Length: 361
Image 1 (cartoon, rainbow, N blue to C red):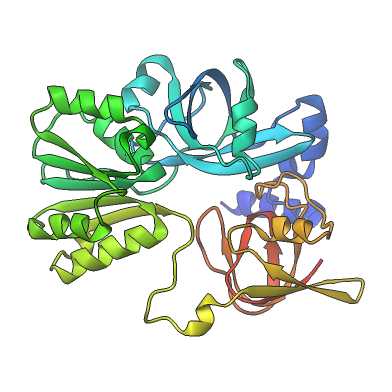
Image 2: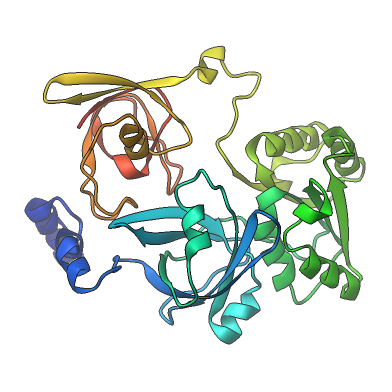
């Protein structure tokens, strides 16, 4: 333990990194393009459209990859034009596919105005990407207890993995799948086949074009006693469901959820919480004030405003974008952890604004 701590301190003193691998990362990437410490390589096998804007990708993953629990997600990194771009995606395939063939599937909504998902559409068979170890605590914990799953939009991906991975059904399970028409229901065929062969599983589609969200909430709350709830979908919709279930007497411990998008302020939060955020980026004594997008990292915000901060990997590995936060609060995109409000060092590429900020580049 002492020697490990001594080595860590030496690395920090030498290169402001926790490992010499990170210090020599630019050189290593010249020798082995695409190398990222702590990441695993995955080769694209096939891709097919699940819906008009949902693309399913099948990857053969490295034998070193440690595997996953159904419901978890990973960070996928693509190398494009000399830059690394990363985004988390939930694994949508059953665990058996990885165990038998070392394959996983991701079902990704393509946003043509986005930075990463259009690149997924351009990938050719055999293309190599990097993936992280699986992470997250959103998984089916009590199969012996009756359960209700609710998925909306892309929220079907981790829930489909949970349901398709289940081999020993011990209690009744219902999935409410909220979609805008069956043509927009990704993975529907696989779930319908599961419902046909498994009598304990019920699939119920909720069409947002004809059924108000309140109707679905009433269905969930009518028979909610002694059930576990697993919710995944857009942040605002998930908040509405959790509030309705709580008001109907469901204990918080019986509600597990995962959402995409930032959590919207609740009615009890101060009105100031909904205001646009600003940041003052200071370089060489000159301050530039910009309006921040809470959907993007500080690095992306700065680049969109014409600033050019230092960066390297763009996924929080190389520490080349470290700078001084003078004031304000940020969220770590990888873990969700909040920083303090005072002065400290942060990484621009994995920091998301929470309050107004003052940053020295």
